[in-house]
Image (cartoon, rainbow, N blue to C red; front, top):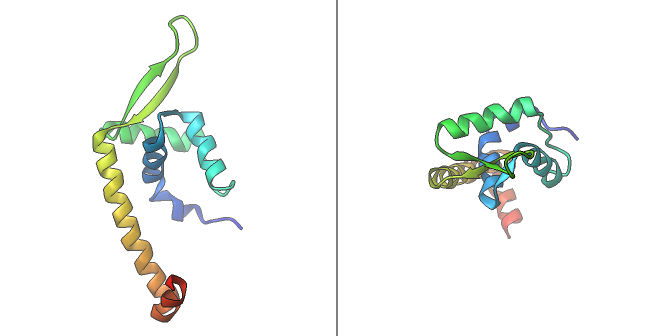
Length: 117
């Protein structure tokens, strides 16, 4: 079952920060991780990912690092910064409040009590 891409739009930057909080990655690796971790539900094109990475870099949340020997092929890896980690922490808390509220609206108080035990 497909998910409306509009639902994903507002979370893409936060999801990229989450992936980079685990390890530094280059663009195509980020795209692959999204697909693997989402079971194929999320797939990004380079034209979607690179503007997100550029915006995160402009805000100081990620920084690029070229890796590879001079004269050979180099890859641009992205690393999360301290500021990026703080942003991620803030966005995770915001996401928890948001999803908790949506669940209350969708399932009601009684259903949440059943789900949470």
